Image (cartoon, rainbow, N blue to C red; front, side, top):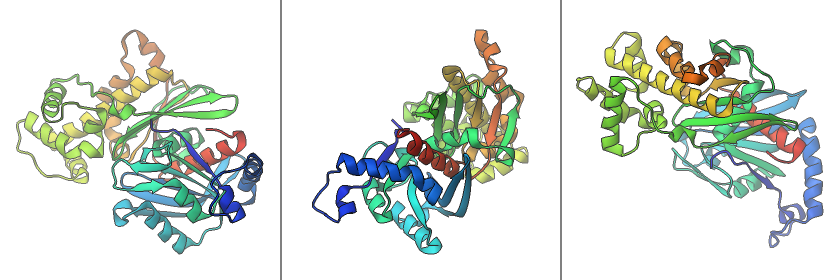
Length: 363
């Protein structure tokens, strides 16, 4: 399942210079953990976000619970054959000094390797740790990092979609479309925030309008299963776009996602319906997550596609998909909804996950 953290301790053979030994003695691991607990005070942490479209790196320093980023770097993932190639360019350009590393990957974590779901990259985590010569590498799904950032964001890092009353100890729901459709839940416990990840973006698309039902049937005839990610995420953009043109009785036009947004602003009926369709899909999914988690701490919409959908997320038809929940509508009314607009959010989340693992020894 996405979101399982992979924290790789430094191997004893590297620490002692014995390449033939793979075991780590308990005493060595304990010493390593002791050094971990001071490294955030003594140096920066290398943080990274390898998403479906871009790859980002930065140096992070945490002081008093606040994260300060420097040497922020962003490139298109398509420019590199491997994650390591992108990492090498960052290291060569910035020559950073760091005490550890924490990365978010757009793939399933928890094992020794990460396969990025929308990019042909396979990341060997132990090899990356050795490449960086660090004691500890924290590796999580990229949306786990995004989710962890949510309660740490403020000011111009967020934009309000709908007001509400936030319970500072309540659970939070985070989700939204980018290349895929990520989800995460935050639960507050005595030890701090705990992030729960999953594959919620692959929940079944829920049509309500006549156009949505016809679209769902058309996509189902092609793919067999229609998910929220297919309808709202970048991976299903072309199929959903063309199906919608057909449903609305028009010849498909090969518009890019950016061109579709522009055409919607200009009043093109298919493009406008497409943007509204995506917004309604997002709000339906987030409402479902809010119900599942009792998200009295707030709902946070994230992802690159979500930011472009902001005007349509605010429309009454989209908000109704979130709030109208039959006998549980009253439960939804006080939940605030915010849009994460900071590109630095997953990097901030990665830094906090590093700190969480360092302070309590688990994620």
